[in-house]
Length: 275
Image (cartoon, rainbow, N blue to C red; front, side, top):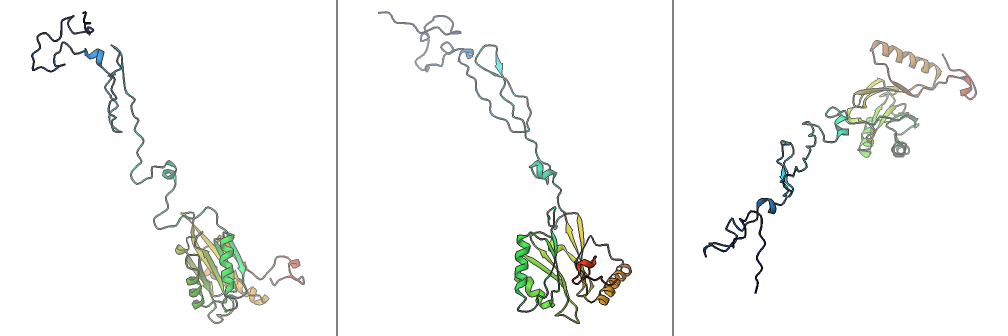
């Protein structure tokens, strides 16, 4: 009976019986004679990945064919953000607002309204309507005339609309239930807590300086001029004199109830205003 011989592997030294000369204590595979060559049994192995930022010099590995080697793919390190900046490029290029300043929008809506009284129990609901209008129309600053508010009334309204509106009022101490001019700031649209005001003529003229677009400041002047022609003339002369004597900054925006018209046809019946 013929017994087939095992195939002769390269590098085994010919057809000698691998069991000849092996002691009983030797385990199979311990002899160099019956091991296949490194070239025939070599299998391509995946080199362990290197951490980002290390050297790109990777050792070459054999792909199983004699004399041919391939290199594993080299991981390209991702750019690391500078300390104190965000990893998002868009945020890196965005100008950072100074600490403590609120980022405001690029556009700001400013309006004016004469409410004809808002300090009594019957007129107090007007402020709820103002809050609704400013929210729906996205008004940032509203100049209000004829507020008829005392300081206690202003404090109560600010408590009522806390987190929504901030009311800054100027009243005439001799007539607290008449006149009155105020700024109503939308807390969602403006840096209301960084605003400053200057009461120029109590109950008639007040200016507001408020941050806008991080680095700019907006100067707004709100007016409630008298209705009587002679008082109206005296008011504008007094305002001009105060501006020159106190060296006040030129306002960027002037608005309010001036109680005057540019053309006669705007009056009913038509007549010109006092010059």
